[in-house]
Image (cartoon, rainbow, N blue to C red; front, side):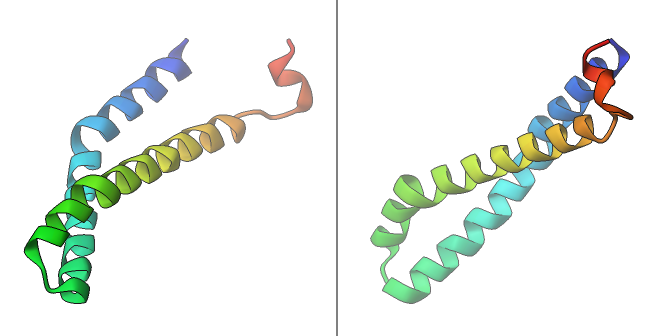
Length: 84
């Protein structure tokens, strides 16, 4: 029970504090690259809403899931930990 509370707390803090900051910074970098490539503000706005934001959000969520799963797996000492 204690492990699940700490994992839930970590996920909560990730969603509340780190995800918006990382999402904002990575989206700004993508925006700059698209603007330099196309030279159009309208194309940059369209690409950000359609392609960049969903791609960045979902990749960060997958990364969060992978880290939390990996930390859970590393807590098992033997094969029988999940059974008993």
